[in-house]
Amino acid sequence: MERSCLAIVLAAGESTRMKSSLSKVLHPIAGRPMIAHVMESLAQADISSAALVLGRDAEAVEKAACRDEMTVSAFLQTERLGTAHAVLAAREAIAKGYDDILVVFGDTPLVTAEPLKAARKGLAEGNDVVVIGFETEKPFGYGRLIVKDGALVAIREERDATEAERKITYCNGGLMAIDGRKALSLLEKIGNANAKGEFYLTDIVEVAQANGGKAIAVAAPETELMGCNNRAELAAIEAVWQRRRRHELMLSGVSMIAPETVFLAYDTAIAQDVLIEPNVVFGPGVTIETGAVIHAFSHLEGAVVGKDATVGPYARLRPGANLGPEAKVGNFCEIKKAEIGAGAKVNHLSYIGDAFVGAKTNIGAGTITCNYDGVNKHITNIGANAFIGSNSALVAPVSIGDGALVASGSVITEDVPDDAVAFGRAPQTITPGRAKLLRERYLAEKAERKKISAE
Ligand code: UD1
Ligand code: CA
Image: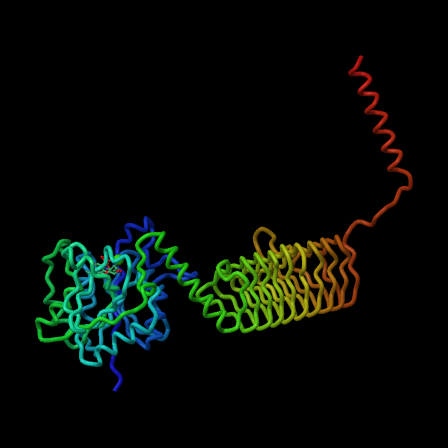
């Protein structure tokens, strides 16, 4: 029989050290709130029920934490009296009766499913409490794990530890699994006679033993347990996340010339045999299909790049940019909410927004879709195999037919039929010898002015 599990996510912190008007668990890692990463790891560990313990920004945090496949309930911890007190804020959820209770922190977003599963396995093997620990060279500030003969006998907080205990390098990551049938009675026995006067969740280790139970620790990599208390730690966590994800992508067949300069979002999807050049930034919602090349210094967000398409260098794809196979978007081009058909080219200095560009169409340098009239956005429809001459302004709403040709420098305000030529600029005139005449006149006038000022 599979064991039932309730995850309790502690997120009632004041976030004082973040110096922010936002709860820290809402600060983004890879483009989405920290707490959403924690929830994803829970989902990957096959946990389908979670109780959130919230303080400030409760509504927004709940919204950020919710996932379709998970039942999430929320509880307010109005007074912050410690981690055990926080867990008890979810008393009602615990009382529903689960085999396992898994306590995680909303500000520890790098934890993966593995140690969560390992902690639950420890419960299944007959332990009452399984604590997720880590080895570190810098144990300062963490609770120390006191292990004897394979059993975890106590967790000592920094402030309450003796000189000898402070030398221990095996630390409490803060996350733990508790036997769900005993959790409430154990939690209720925790007191607050310690240096901070708080109800420490960590005391559950000694309480469990006093009641005839057993506790153990399972080790996880230190990076998975990095907590976020300030913005420097936020950046450090982001860096670990980025490194981890780049590595996964490279192992899945994506080439990166300078991976440390590529920034990914939580949902960036890149297929095999894609090349990402240096200094590329992915915002949320990007999919890159196989064989595509993203040249240096490009910024992509909410975009799809089709098979064998190329982007950049220095291109910006904004939400709704959808490049077909073998399409090309070159330097200093911005594409927004626009379909660029298969093999179409937008190679230099263009803005294409709210538009459809047909297959194999060539958009000349400096072409602009004038999609905004100051109040409304309008659509530009360009057919297949069309040619838009350089420096044209296409004033939307406007359509340009298949195979049509727009003369360069045109301002197009009316629809152009299939295979037609549109010429939307003043005709050129030639006046022979006029330039020479003008030059001689200007020089003569200048000489005259000099003579007058010298007199
Ligand atoms: C805790 C552990 C410590 C461990 C460290 C790992 C305890 C007593 N100590 O210490 O052994 O090494 O984590 O990072 O558990 N929270 C609430 N309500 C409260 C108190 C805390 O929701 O009343 C939440 C915080 O928002 C945070 C988490 O619980 O997400 C941990 O609390 P924090 O005060 O940061 O604990 P530490 O002192 O870091
Ligand atoms: Ca902490």
